[in-house]
Amino acid sequence: MKRICFLGFSTAAIFSQLLVNGQTPAPKPLLEQASDPVVLTIGTTKVTKSEYEQFIAALPPQIQTEAKGPNKRKVAEQYAELKMMAEEARKRKVDQTPAAKIQMALQQDQMLAQMLFRDLQTTVKIDDAAVLKYYEAHKNEYEEVKARHILVRFKDSRVPLREGQKELSDAEALAKAQELKKKLDGGGDFAALAKTESDDTGTGAQGGDLGQFARGAMVPEFDAAAFAQPVGAVGDPVRSAFGYHIIKVDERKSKSLADMKDQIEKQLRPELAKQEVDSIKKANAISIDDAYFGK
Image (cartoon, rainbow, N blue to C red; front, side, top):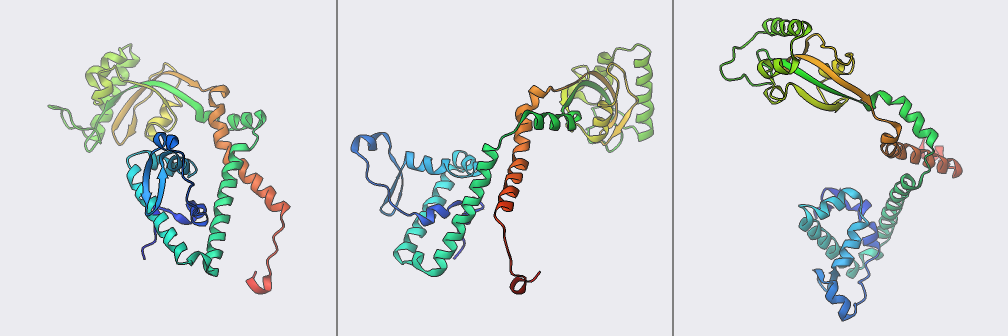
């Protein structure tokens, strides 16, 4: 039989608790039934809205997202199929076989281990010193610049050729970019030149304004130049797959520790949780028989 999976996630880790505990909920009073309708019927088992939502809330975040989004019905269908097959297995006493008991115990252990790790990530204590240390070590990643550019495209550029525009070779595009740089160095208006000369028509209409962006938001060549250029200066033409960029950085700033604190804590939690796991390992010695298992 085809193995049942829950939207691509193996049931081994996700539904072990469901397979182990197949009790049918006790009937509810009529008044409560009216406000909590049955939304799923699987044979003789009826699942109410609150019961189903409670079940979904206990699953990993990625499946919760699927269960509340476009795949909502698909999740319910797969859940119903799994419940149906599990109930049939119980009727046939498959759950009483030694192999089933061993596998269910293993699945439950796997689920508990995963839940423990998630709990450690949530409860681990993160002191201000650890956050500050991480912030200082990654401070350059939190820089943002506000910049504008003029793009001169060349043959085979990723930017489409404008109507009536002459196709330039790489050398011709570089020569044009250098000429524009001279005009800007001589006092030319950057915004005005961007409107008339930039092949990036989207930003060109805005005077070349790219707004504010963080490291990694632009192609590497552009990114490196924008974060290295002095504020207010017009840099030498920078080549990328789009063409030659003439860049002017209007502002550069770094997000403060207060701005980044929540994000840093989120990034630290998995690593600190792993340290907690290492502590648990040290407190619970594991011995493996080399004669039986090999070294």
